[in-house]
Length: 155
Ligand SMILES: CC(C)(COP(=O)(O)OP(=O)(O)OC[C@H]1O[C@@H](n2cnc3c(N)ncnc32)[C@H](O)[C@@H]1OP(=O)(O)O)[C@@H](O)C(=O)NCCC(=O)NCCS
Image (cartoon, rainbow, N blue to C red; front, side, top):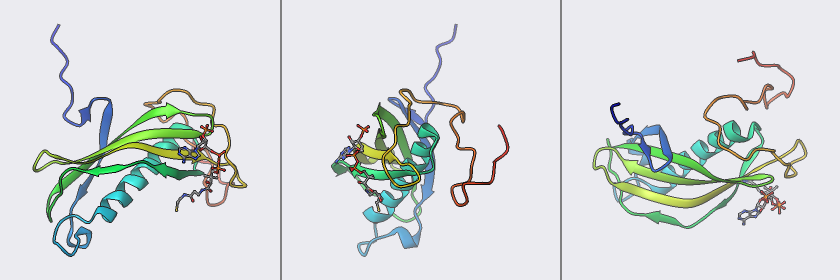
């Protein structure tokens, strides 16, 4: 049987789903990618990942560990962001993140720990009940967060 090839968007357990095109508004005064823009993209991607994994729209960033910027990017470069859940706590989910430059093929940064916490309606940490990564959409919330009332269509 032919050996299965690892897809280019996968690396050591990380799945690189998000891609960004570095635009003029993403640059710092030095003309390279502004770290704040990259962190905003990662935080948003991590929030969506946490919602999908924990089945709760009310998931908030609690902690981001040391960030190691290894390389940068310039206008027009293509960036991809990879995330992987590394620990399911009682109310929390810990992920690691990597961002890399698709043009130079260099890693831009790594973050060992991004912790999100699942909250209830009152903003109190609430147990999510999960222990493993899902690769399906089986935990998607069935109510819109804005109203909490509108039922979404079943999958
Ligand atoms: C999220 C929040 C409700 C948590 O409150 P808290 O009193 O710290 O809650 P707890 O002490 O019960 O901890 C909740 C979970 O976070 C984890 N946690 C708390 N502090 C942590 C830290 N510094 N690093 C890693 N994990 C941490 C705990 O271990 C716990 O996980 P577990 O249940 O899986 O064991 C509160 O800190 C908050 O509202 N923060 C603001 C969140 C926010 O708005 N983020 C967006 C930033 S603009």
